[in-house]
Length: 198
Image (cartoon, rainbow, N blue to C red; front, side):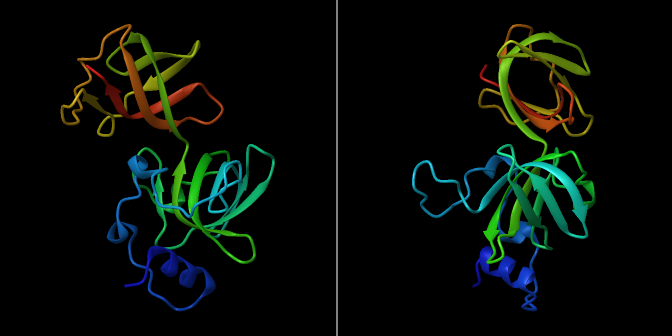
């Protein structure tokens, strides 16, 4: 069986391969964001198959991204690419200004054929300063982050319990970890999951 990387290379190079859906190749959701297998890389060396930054422009299925190190990345999205923005989404949800992390296959011309793209993903820890039915004010290293509950999307995982949409067990001063989607150019986050140790 051909690997995901072989299929992506074929799709980008126009080899005529039929690219199967990302879910058929295994989950690349946020829980797997940085756990995907990658070749051994020398310490301190950038991972050639990873890119991060903010989308500057979108043309057809290609993203032009300016990295935090001021290096531009060209990222191609194909049929087999998994995209996440508070949940699995289509390519039409990618917008200029979005932050992203992408992992994939570096092509000979330097372009990254994306296996997975995480749009505006944040994973932050802090303690709850205030909580309402719709928002959580989080103190994250002395910075106030306003986290929004999204109906039908936001869930909490308390200790070892299964995920629930009931966030009423969360309390002021409790330490939590929030996985969510940043609202670009704000201190606001839409909540995917709140993890609370107890």
